[in-house]
Image 1: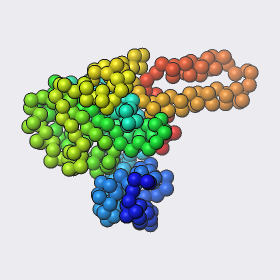
Image 2: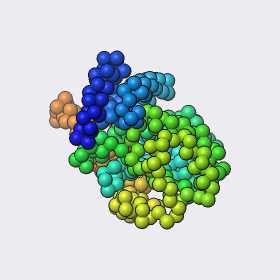
Image 3: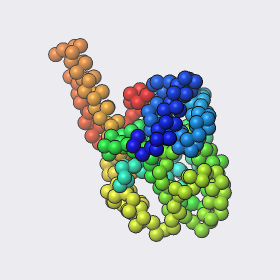
Image 4: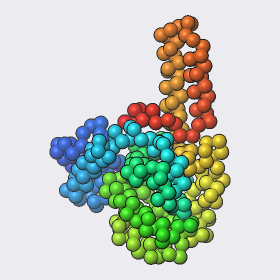
Length: 327
C-alpha cells in the first residue's frame, strides 16, 4: 500500500508469512486475510511483530469461541439488522449504522438518553443483548466497510462514531458501566483501528466525572480521536456529514421515511447491497421454478415471488436468511 514506509511494507510481508506458517490465520477465515486487515493489527501494536501476532491470535481464539460456537455461527443466526426484540433494544440503547460521511466513512450513531436496562431486560435477556452488540461490531468489517469502499471507489477502513448523550446522566452510567467497558474492550482488542473519529455530543455537566471513569479504559490512540461537544454541535456535524446523510434528530435532513426511520432502516451502501442480493435470489428462484415446472407452474406461487420483489423496494432491513451469502 502506497502509504506505507519501506520498513512497514517489509513488516507486513514478514507478518503475513509468519501468521500463515504458524497457522494463526488461514485462507478463507472471515476475519479477512487482505493487507488492510493485517495492517489493522500491526498498527494497533505499532508494527511490533510479536505483539501483533499475539493480538491476532487472541482475536482468532475469541472469534472461534464467542457465544459458545463462534462469531460465524452467531452472525448466521443473529442478523444485526433484523432480530427479535430489535425495536425494544433501540428504545433503550439505539446503536446503528447510517449512511456515510464526507470522506465515505460509515457513520455509527448511538443514543444513550433512553437507556433503561431493567426495562429492556423484560423483553430480551442480558446475554442476547450482549450478542446484539457483538454482531453489530462484527458487521462493520464484515459488511459495512467493504460496501462503503465499493460505493466510494476507494479503500474505506474506518468509521465515524457519533454518540448522543442527551438525557444521559450518572444513573444511566452506573447501569451501563460494565457493559460499556466490555464493549470498548472488544472494539479495541478484536476490531482494532476501525474507528476513525468519535464525536460525543450533548455531553451533560456530569460528563467530566463520567469521562474520568471511561478514559482509562481506552488506548491513548483512541482518546486522541475523541471530540467532546456540548449542545452546540450541529455545525461540527455538518462539517463532517452532509445534511442529506445526517438524521434530523442530529440536525440533518434525513428521515428515512418509509423505511422505519433512520435507526431501524440501516440505510447505507451495505443495505443497498443486501437488497440487491435479495432481489437476485427472488429472480433466480422465479426462473428456477419456470425451468422446473414450465407453463404448468401455479400462478399463485409466481405472484408470491413477484410480491417479494416489489416488497424489497419498500423494506428497510432485509431478513436474516441472507447471511449465508456473507460468510
